[in-house]
Amino acid sequence: MNRRERLLYTLRGQKVDRPAVCFYEINGYDENPDDKNPFNIFSHPSWLPLIELAREKTDRIIMRGVAFKEIAPDPIGHIAVDETTIRNGSRYIKRTVKAGNHQLTMETRQDPDINTIWTIKPLLKNVNDLDIFLDLPVFGAGETVDATAFLKAESDIGETGLVMIDTPDPLCLAALLFDMSNYTMIALTEQERFHRLLDRFSEVLITKTREVAKLLPGRLWRIYGPEFASPPYLPPLLFHEYVYRYVKPMIDIIHQSGGFARIHCHGNIRDILDDIVDMGADAIDPIEPPPQGDVELKFVREKYGDKLVLFGNLECADIENLPTNEFRKKIVRAVNEGTENSGRGFVLMPSASPYGRVLSNQALENYQEMVRIIESVI
View 1 (cartoon, rainbow, N blue to C red):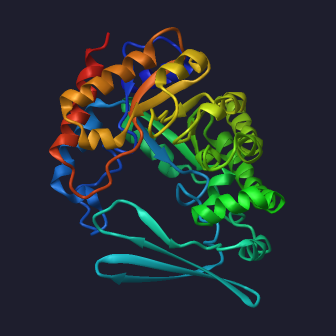
View 2 (view 1 turned 90 degrees about the vertical axis):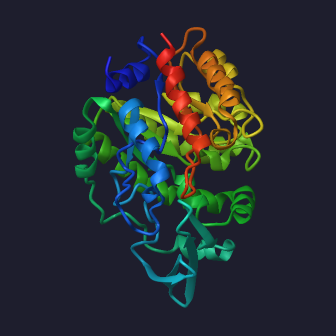
């Protein structure tokens, strides 16, 4: 069984020769060790053995955005003026949006040794800013769906894995406009306004989902953003209001094209799993164990394993910090709990990837152990 077949059989709930193993973002395809851009952490030689291991040994899932130019659509790119500066080696981008007599600004920072972008100042600071934003032109109307990069990736990786369509839900686009405290306060206390914001994003995303599903039927999708409404940020009732109400129509469209929908949701999921299943999700990741989450993999397998393919449930912090003899126990437990009893399928996968420039020998050894253990499972 080749790696592509193994993943497809897993998604369909069919028998496989062994559980699949995926390193999540590390796939041996997107990382470019030869790119000398100062913000490319993968140029450090410590990453090369892991990149090669992912390419040669893992059941690769390559994430690609299709509906927009980037995986994460830019809800203000059509109206913002950007100013980029480099200070002390870090890249700062200030974005300005003019709305009549008002001006909205945000700022981000990217450091050369950390593979992430920090929002220093969010675009929306209060309810007044939200009202201004709601009167601005909606994004995405002029962008055409382009499957070129997706199809090239499919051709390039061949039988070594799958290419997955990546898309946010409306809540993700809405929440990222605020800092976390203002987001939760407004989502709790200004529900009518917040629904108006979600409705704007949903109109765009539903249209794009329909276009992409028609262009690329039968593919795996990942929908990210539901974690913004998971406890303790918001109560389960608002998960239903802000996620179920908007994501179920996206999943229905994906299913109509023969595709599979994987829900990405960090943190506490026990009280929202019923909604996730009722939405029609085919899979869920990363199913974090306590204390990062609030459910064990065994519980999810026993209660929902006949409906969901389970992706997880190794913590990135454990990959980076645990001695291999201790991490081995985590791997064995995840494989046993993810595959015991009857169920739809399981993919061994970490919750995230290291994002520092230098990959430690400990982390590399733990990734290697994941592959060794999976390859020993018959």
